[in-house]
Image (cartoon, rainbow, N blue to C red; front, side):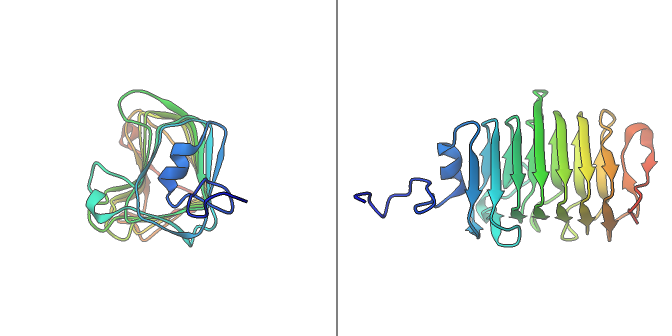
Length: 212
């Protein structure tokens, strides 16, 4: 093999050093596997038809640099269609699904992740904005007693929040605006600022079977 051992090409033997490098090289339909490690970077998924899988959600850590933190920044932003992100630990930041500018993106899956709030600026841990057919399932969403809301939905359709643990948010486990009505099932809510799961459609409180 005459290949330069110092050159990363995204193969199993010579993986890219950053998630962004792998994302830049990926083509639609690819699966990006991420080895355990701490990746101090922010990523934006603009491409569609991608699957991003971490080796383990305890040790595959996406950690937003301190210099990038702030209300307008996030460790992970998903703008493409048919995107799955699973088995990651996303620390000290938050996740955005959808651009929030009225342009819908479709079919996003956030699964088997651990998402931990930012002690500097975290207000919403997972924000879903102008998106359709979003599945948030089997995650641990931990507010660190500083993030206000675990999952927030804004002008969305068909958002399914299922089998998650949502804890230590200073306000609500789940909240949504008047044009959102997420489907909730088999979630566990505890140690949030209010004992209820709140969806603001009509100003009504929504109880979840396993919320307390």
